[in-house]
Image (cartoon, rainbow, N blue to C red; front, side):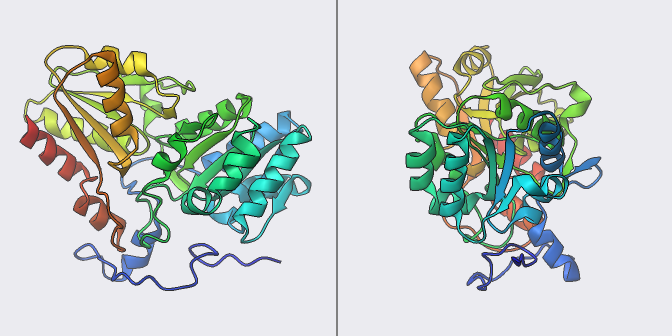
Length: 349
């Protein structure tokens, strides 16, 4: 029997960082530190990945699940409870989990392997490269706590995972925005014949894109709203933030478009270049990731190679190990909050 402590099996040591707490948070500090993101005032969906995987398994007997002692914290428990004979609890051994997933894929299964993003990207990289990506096996690596979605400091903050995995051949990289997209993307990556790394928002996940009639398409960027002054090019939950920032900026007569880019690799260069080439707009990338090696630099490189020369800025995390603390405090401190995004855009115009 495995043991999963409150914020993950790998978190037994205390962080050396002093937590920063939002003013007035008081006793709410702990919940603020482990929350995936601020969803106040939004409708939420519980465990969209877990329920989507369970739906897939009902129709496909090749779907199997694995977790590195974190099934409850990656929503894999929904699948495990429904299909216990198709679930493998691998313990605190990410490399073993990845190797087992590769073996299952070779035998005709489609494995979904879950852990925290830091452990997949930092600990299991070589195993993913050699056992899965080089062989182009259909293993789906789905990881919670991407970027700054936990307040527990650098041991849990996967601020560089996109940079790490963008450089791996054969690997598709997906960063969904919300519950709607997480469920749709789960079905899409299951149908994809190769390996996938997908960032995961777990627990109660906001429903943001549903009101726009959004449909996820693997490898495609989609315009969520149009605007004349600023083009946000965003991924993950930062699309939620820039949509809110666009509403805020509209009050100051700043008209913002939002181009959502859920597939980081392969990047939809054609759509991004076409949108950026529309004259007169500042292009601002927004990502829950360090500004080194993620969506921002991918977009900048793509635009340069396409010959599209436009004013360009990045919203992202700094190239440093981040503080521990309450997420609302950290998001504002590092420029990911709606207030911070709005202020940055106004300063750039």
